[in-house]
Image (cartoon, rainbow, N blue to C red; front, side, top):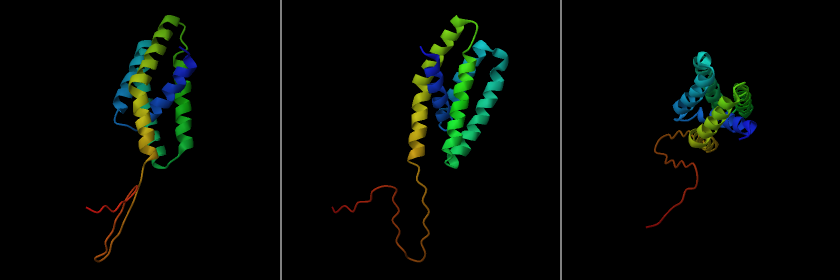
Amino acid sequence: MDVATVTEAAGTALVGAMATDLWGKAVDGVTALWRRAYPDRAETVAAELEQTRRQVLAARQSNDERALQDLRTGWQLRLAQFLDLEDHKLAEELVAELHRLVEEELKSAASLSEHNCANKVEMKVVALGTSRVNQVAGNQYNYKD
């Protein structure tokens, strides 16, 4: 398995998952990987993931795609450095586990997050008096029985 491909997919999926309900699984999975290689750093990484999540949510709120890309790239690099271990057998195991985490848990969460972000609609209507208001986020059809 190519480490660069796995870390690129993992960084992208991780940041995407940060804005979904599956965030808890993502942070648990990544923290568990860190705990295997660097047990003394796992809690620090968990805190950094929480901080990144706050940044992701703020960037999504303000539609700041550049900030999101910077966060993706940052975690891609962080994961690549993490997997650069002297113990090659452990590194291979962690790459395989990271790949499994991305494919089975993070990828679906990230795609759901991207889908929800792309289809976000915000509408506000003020009706005064006896006005009739129809508000639709898509197509509106008049059907006759």
